[in-house]
Image (tube, rainbow, N blue to C red):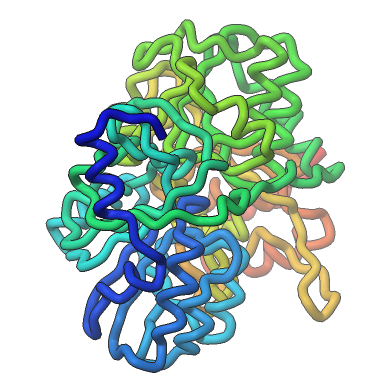
Length: 456
């Protein structure tokens, strides 16, 4: 590496095989993995190999890229118990097979749980190669790595030189002096994802939202096709001087930046900086982030803190949902008892955007979905099925958008909410929703006329 000898000597002394590093885990330990694409893959395999000799080892991960080997090795038993803050598609499949348990939380509170509510025996994470000053950078998975490390008994870094070096910000690296073991790997490329496919419905919803955005607004996009459709639509618009303060950075932001829509000049907080806590997208996005001083990686207690979100004017928060009920509650995590994802930062940004001067938050969803049996169902429901989790209480929901329109729920009574939401439901389900609203005593005689006028 050609580094100065004191730092390099520490590195050499702490370098071990994955198998030797995994042996520090003892029965009864709590092990924390790095977030998203910084989850350890070589160490994960080494720890999974020890499933037969360990008891009651709990692992916490956050959206593991693929299927965690410890989850499959544990098979829902008492050897390796796999827990997760936010599901990836692989985590969801493991949960379906009873090999994964969800940890409920709001994203901004993640760092605070460590030292206050949780302890960590062993922390395992991927990071970039050590720099000349002895720092390993967390790359695209800042999140709350720093808080875990600060509270861990043992810290193991798995080096991967395909991780981009993402500049801070805050909380984006760990020094060799804080690391107990270093594991070198085959540098298998980190996971990339393409832009989600955008449907005609997504495009209609994007059009309705983009017309609400003004020059100088600060943008937060959630995961999925609809928020990214908004980003693509912004890139093709005439909007100017947009800012970014978000938890997740996706390819849509790169498109907006390259189109000249994002300058970050009008932000009150971190002007000139594109602020985020993790990134998930294409290799082109990762190349853009690598050593880019225009981008600032922060821990999530900074990006998702209420006062930091609301510090910028005209914050626009755009997120997906699974269902919305006639009271205005939003379910974005589960469908009945089947857990799909997690709360993430949806609550943080829905609340924070509303408290921004001129800010707005939008919950987007198609009006219908086709279930596994081929039945078309309304995604605006009278009430949720048993087991469906409320992600946003009705008091927090601001705007709801489907391809049939957008409505603002703030300040509205229960009957006004029912009227508004039925007006943007699919026409085939409106009569049924009206009957249910009447039964629920949130419908008055004038509603039918008003709902039909609004729909027209």
